[in-house]
Length: 142
Image (cartoon, rainbow, N blue to C red):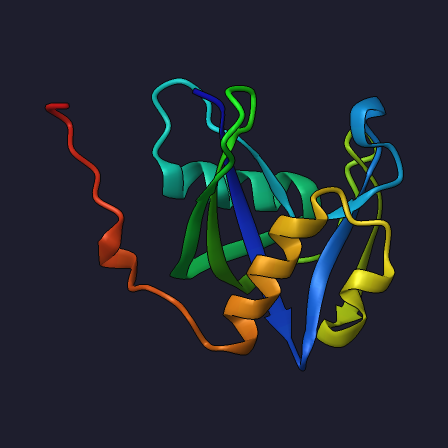
């Protein structure tokens, strides 16, 4: 199963977007996100991906949702609200062309990588839909 962990970072009414450098989504805008590594927890992967793509140290504050499409190749997106707790903005040129803070109401004016999912995410943010971090459990015996 293809699992993508995703950070939604909002500050002063703006959301942090990254512009993709990788060929499959070149110049598309998205959220700091990526795949789980073997042996990595969902939370650890989300924090790592956020740091790799933005330079920021993050704290996950809430689960925003888990999203899955109906096609077999569609990944499962696990989306967290995150806050910056340190670091400084750094662009990883291997993966990212640009980073910018975009007013929430202007996000869809950009060439978004997964527009339907972004609309769902923005609606949850607007409606203040979020779940406690305790909804995510880590078990060694599974």
